[in-house]
Structure formats: C-alpha cells, structure tokens
Length: 531
Image 1: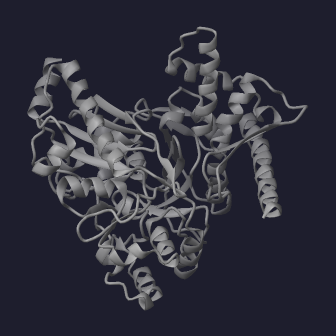
Image 2: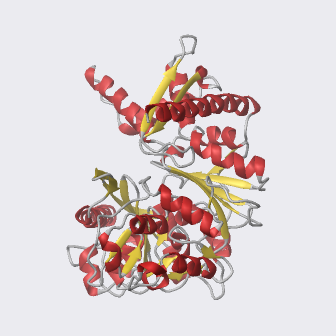
Image 3: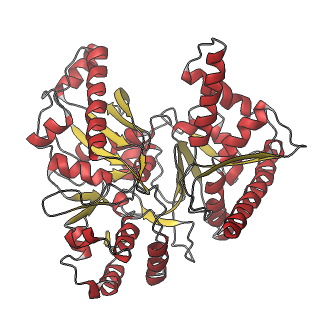
C-alpha cells in the first residue's frame, strides 16, 4: 500500500481513458502494468433528428466525472492525491463525424459510428477506390453530407474522431493514432499516411464543388504508437480535472480507436494473431500476412497502432439485447423481493446458457438495436422467434441470445476463414461479453472454429490497452518495438486461458446460423414488400 502511494505521488504511472458506447472508463497502471485504480461514467447515445449522437456537454461531463471517480478511487485506496501521471492516452469509439469550423466550433452534432445513413456515399466511394468503405467511416459521412448538399460542408476546417477531439482540446494538437485514422480514410501501410492515390481520386470527385479546403488539409496528422503527441496544457488539465490538482505538462501518446486498444490489451498486433472485442458492438481484428484477394463490404481494412494491415469485421450490435433481457429478469426478481447483484445476475444467466443445446433449442433471435451493415439491415429490429416444437428453456433462451450476439460477426469471419483462407494462430477475447469465465470464449470458439484465449484482464479491455499504449510512450527501450514491448514485458509468461472449439458446439452453431441467415432473408423480403 505504502509503495503504491509513493509510486502514485511520484507519477510513475500511466493512464488510459476510453469512451465506449455506454461507459467511459479510466484505468491507471503502475510500472508492472497492473491496474491499480479505475473510474467510470455511464452514458447513452441519443437519436436526434435521425442521427445517433452524444452532445458535447455529455462528452465533457462524462470525462470529468470519470476522472473524478478515478481520483476518488486513488484517494480511497492509497490516501494519495492524483497530481502527477507519467503519461496519458485517450481512446474512443472509432469512425463517426466531428466537423469543426475555423473557430473550433462543432458544425453539426457528432454523428457516431452507429448511424446507417451514408449508404449512397459508402457505395460510391467503395466503387471509386476499389476498396471497402463502410458506412460508419468518417469519409462516408463527409461525402454523404456533400451529396445531401449540407451547408456546413463549405465551412469545415477540421474533421476528426471522438478520441481525436478530446486529445485536441487537452493538448492543442490535431493528431490521431494510425489505427483510429485508418477508420477515417484508407491508409497506405507502406508510407503510414492517408492513401495518396485515393486522396487524389476524392479530390477530383468533388473538385466541381470548389470547397475552400482539401482533404489532407482537414484530416488529423497521423502518428504511430510510441511517437509524442503533445503534452497536457494548463487549459487541458483544468478541462480534465475540475479540482485543479492535476499538473500540466504530462506527455500524451497518440489518441487511438477502440480497435487499436483492443489489440494492445490482448497482445494481438503480430501477424496471424487476432482479437475479438465484444460489448455494445462487436468486432474482430486479424493481422494479415498478405492483403485480401478481393474487396468485401463485410470486411474493413484498417491497421494496428504501428500501421500493419488488419482485416476488421465490425458488427454494430452485440450485447444490447442480452442486457435488455437481463434487465427483465431483474424486474422479475425485484417483484418477488429478491436482492441480486448485477454481477451475480449476469454470471448465473451466462453460466446456465452452457447447459443449453448446441443449436439453441431450434429458436432464433437477432438483437439489432440499430441497423446492421454486415447483414444489410438498415434499421434496428430486436427479434426473438420460436416454433411450437422449439425447446424453450432458460438455458436455451440464454444460449440463443449469447449466440445471436455473435451472428453478424460470424457472417464476416466466415469470409476470412472459409473464403480467403486467412491463417489465424490465436484469437483473444476481451470486453464484457467474456467476463464470465468460459462462456463467451466457448461460444466464440464454436462460431469461428478457432481456439480462443481470454486473459485475466479481459474485463478491463480498451482502457487498459490505452494505458499500455500510453506507457509505451515513456517506458519503452531504445528501438524497442511495440510487439516486443508487449510480449517481453507486459504479457511475459501470460497466455491466458484457452478454449478449444468443440465439434458438437461447432455443428450446433452452424445450425443456428442457418436459422439466423434465413430470418434475415425474410426480413429483407418483407421490407421490400412493405416498400
């Protein structure tokens, strides 16, 4: 305890703060890379005027309250004031659209990754570049605004992501980590810059608009992990810590997206490795040996925090439907006067799912709270269906929804594994879906027919990964690569617990996914008939 107090007071720590879809979380680590304190703030996006968004007030209230709870945790555990930190890193949900004018004013409300309003732009850019440009990417949002004739486009001076915005306000630096930048616009993995050919093509595409800006002029400068991204300014310190105790001058690493922090948190930045981050949304990242042979709308090409090519399968929906049903079960328990902790409720319901049938009792669900690009569903449509002959039990019901949370992900992963024959040596799982030991990883192993490992830090996820990237900035050795840093120092001797795919579970998941795809096909047909 005394040693940790001294460490905190001396500033021999690193801090990662990540803005997730439903929670902002801070994790403080010591020089052994272990979390020693944390803070959090719960928030929700809002659907306003047809766009999923978070207000600037919510962003800053969330950040300050999250940091405040971290400082309180430090005070309670160690009797220390948080005044010095060795390095800080910010990460957030990737993609989206935050456009600012020359005065630094937000031109339109923040449009998050969750919006499925850019189909026309994404399709046109994918064809123009011969490169998959998903709807959630920043360039899709920008071009859709151009196609819509939105007046604000002419006034754009800076375009960035949520992590880039936070970093800019705290340091004055308009920079972005390469992993987050790769979700704004395609990256040339050789030069580690925005793809020059595609930048030129986009310029020609919009040249008749005569905008006063160029694409590279409004995008953030790209940095790779380990490069200096500025320091916390006096103004930034006040924005972060309302108490005024935190000192300015703290070095910051490049801001990253939640995909990059997931790779760091699972030691999966080397080729033939991958990770799956599962929470409100779910995405898989697989580091490639070679580029894919074809362009697939289900697969994004992004990068690791050091710029290596990565195939990303991103599904907008994962645990929201599970959370909703658990909430219903909580209401039932409270109705009968039962006081059950949130952790116990989730753990019991997750574990009972493993008693269910491998095919989920021949029932079907897809919990789409928002549109799903992979399966081409444009609107949220949470759905649960069973036959009169289905085996309707609590175990099958829970296994169904846990499997359904991976449904869209599996559609994309099947392309990588079965069609492109991408070699994967190891997959690591992290995020809330994997918190209950042996459940989420067993289902994922069945879904992708690949061994899945989970570390003890799986529940920490992105914020811890961001803290590791922040630590790399100040604690790395001379010429030490990020991969060597993670393997030799952070994860030395820690491979996590592994779950091998079970033949019966694989067969059951394949039966489930047939029902899943069939139901989606019916949904599309019905939508066309209604139109």
